[in-house]
Image 1 (cartoon, rainbow, N blue to C red):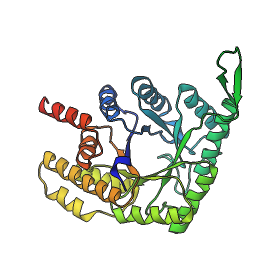
Image 2 (spheres, rainbow, N blue to C red):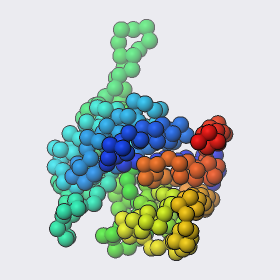
Image 3 (cartoon, rainbow, N blue to C red):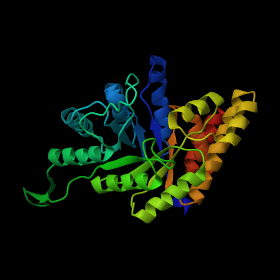
Length: 320
């Protein structure tokens, strides 16, 4: 692919401490200065971070030129509650969503999904479109020279991303089932895919090609996180269920310094991103862990930042 057309985006989560909350605006500002396609904000199970998620989305909307993407889950909410939440996001100015089934709450009994009345991400996609249609049934365009407006048959469309699983969803029985699920999400109105974390580029490249061959038309962005410590790698493997990337794990374990581990993680993520882009990925989605330094270093080394942004980063490091 032409790297000139490759794009990138970021993911943040609501801060959990006062210190993290005070530091996050500076991180958002640095991320926004690179002109990403969007910055997504996670949403806790059963609405556990509803207010803080919305506050973070509003900060991005009010203080940057970047589109904020709101996460929505199916866990623990009724149709009415989810409808109100979607309307609240739309009223705040949010026009991009990531619709996911969601993980059960931490206190859920074994086997319980925690799902509310919305049972799948495809249903959630349909609900977002329905709320938008009810909220804005038509739009008007002023007619030049006349005190009148023309009614437009089309309305503003929202961007709705969905999750993709290169190595299969935990409840899936086959790759074909995962691709059928993506096709169902597409039929419901999804127009973007974002993968969970994975650590072997061939997993994504094979999955993306099979999805395309099956008729999935929307782009699927690979999700990448610079893993800068052994502890973080272990945590990511716990959350994702992915196979251990043994080469990365060994390098991190034998490197004694934090700075050395950080460099290993950035270099590994850079090579990973280059392989994916060379293989045809339309861009990359970077899980930031609410820190900007590592992901911006990956973008710079990958060559996805503009010259002006790269110069700014160099100056910042020189004066640090």
